[in-house]
Length: 169
Image (cartoon, rainbow, N blue to C red; front, side, top):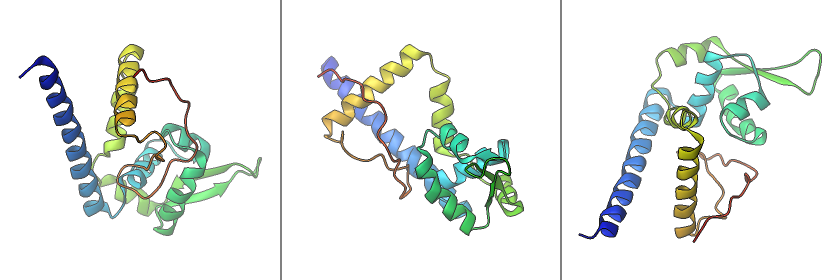
């Protein structure tokens, strides 16, 4: 096997590993909690630091605030979170966990999205740039540049497109 074939093989296997871990962890979350990974991630963030403004929660999850609305609607419908308007600025909405939400967090597994974000945030800028460039190239190879970024194992789509970086061919 040539060097190039070995590298392609390793990349394909690593992509398979990523999909396998995401699928397994997401299925475990759904089975144990009845929530999608992103929904559980919201609850876990709120358990660490709440109440939070919707915009701050979206920022911590690398999501557009409009994307948070669907997640919060579903969580509120399950009596896991509560929204409260600021008394000083009625445009500001704070999110907090209900007691039911706190109970669910105590017995829930780790969320794959949280592991991914923590790991990426810990990397040096150069390594992060290398990963970003490599993934952008994979997206280009698959012709998925215009595909809306759907949250992992969830029906939600992250709204506006982020900045675009030029990908070398």
